[in-house]
Image (cartoon, rainbow, N blue to C red; front, side, top):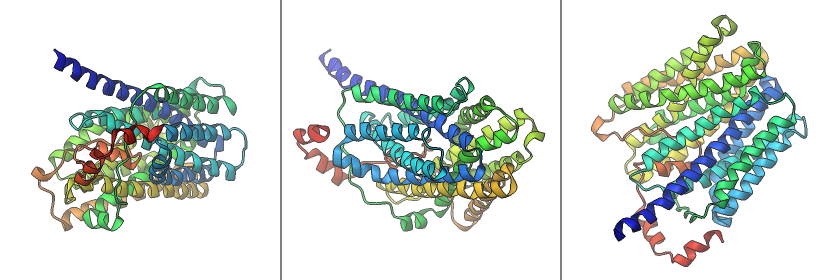
Length: 436
């Protein structure tokens, strides 16, 4: 009985911590989904939206790698509170000055800060979940991220069409996201020291994974920037735009598990190439716009979103199939994330320029070309390099493309013995003082 009580006392705080963190994640990404839709609507120009979205993803890439440096300097709790304050400042500032240069600068700051906040949340998830439960925690975390992004735009269906109120609601959501984390008493996790990701190593291990991750970022960034502009070109009002940016995102989550299961049982590159080429056909079909009908457009967008969500974890799974040791997982993931970020920054800029010259519908043409070239490269790689035996393949794990810290949730990631030894040698007083 005493043993059961001790086990309960160990498990209950961890479950409570996970629930608090996942709740904060949902609310935080509701704000993100609302802001991602609101910014292009306010700009109402493909080129301007592409520029501002590119600034956001450049900042996001920087924040994902600079965030851990700040955490080491001031600790998790202070970093979380301070960074979330910067995000709130960035969101509210967008309602103050209607200038493209200002919005670009603010979105750069926004992206860097929200990425660093995600580093903190994901570090807590790693600490609060044991190895035996990380796969399930990761699945719930993925649903929290994309579910929040899908729910956020729905607020535009009933909010007044003013400049202040939607941005204020997004800021309020961020404030509410801070409350459970800052008020919940939990030990902040230690950030393990690891070497920077090596692009050369990643290129040697799996160039097709890097190409796929970059294409996923390029296409996803383009869709984020031009999706609302595309919806406006169809004659939809603000509520219609919000639904088009929300419903397909939520429906797209259904495709994650079938694609993952297929990749676990068949050659992963063939699954990736097939999915990429199908998504390219979806993007090409969307160019026809109004002639398709709204139901067909919703279905095509849901398929496009769903495949783009799956490409990143598929690329990571294939790269992990080829690494020498499981301890390489975090570095491989960080390298893929950097490729994703570069693609996500370039996509809106390129697609926005094409949309300015040829009209908003042509943005999908850029996406189609990028996906078609990547799919062809995956097929070429299948014929050039030997496949990974099914017995050597790790299981597919659905990962959101957020920050390098999330890769420590990957079940195949094992602790570095040296790091573990050093951490075990740290005194309890030093551990407790990290966030004092």
